[in-house]
Image 1 (cartoon, rainbow, N blue to C red):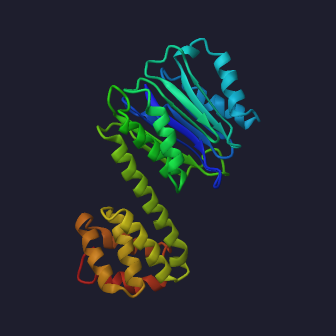
Image 2: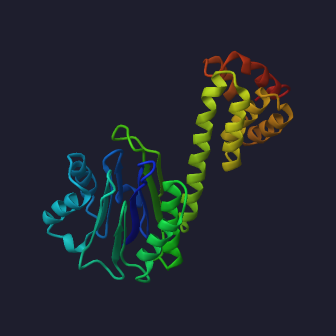
Image 3: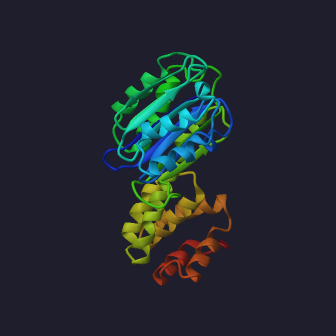
Length: 299
């Protein structure tokens, strides 16, 4: 009793699944994806095996429609299932069993499948499709837009409890993910899922600061950390590292202000930086900035 979308981005070739339901921990059951293979959403009295078995068939060369047809043929309870699949070439397929709880249905288009059951209105899946197609930008944003459109149409008639977003890159090992975000129990799971996506993007920016910092390009590292801090201003670890990169880039007063904020949330912030420096995970040139930030503080 869930709504979901599986999709392939034609430009980046990322694959993704997004889902929300009135049941805890939907991310453990419904969404499945593998780089260069495909994505699956298995819901409505979910048979979890559709995820790994569907990916295995697509990995072996089957299209999403053929993989889904084979699994349905072997399932005596197919009429209570709802499943969507998309493969790495963008071929998509869906199934809504005759015994799925109304309102239930799906829509399939190039590179995407959207499916929903036990919805307040039978307009949910078409609204999701329209929102996905109308939204520009990264795949994760388009998936989120589809979920938000479902809620605007009333969503699950039981309410809401958990949500998940899974996006995998075009290539990589089977376990590689771009985002694997889960809200296991929340009365407003899409709000929390959106926050987690912003946080994940903040840490992507954080990661991008590492190479320039080690190359002593502290201005570039500070720019990446400025981006991270703008996305997650309440994360004290990001605040701390933004403070360091700003100080190392010569923006000492800005850095000191943020260091005070980080230390208020975690008094061991100074020790955090000193230990990274001692372990060789920062260049020696960062030492004066750490000293400047931690001056007259225990850290």
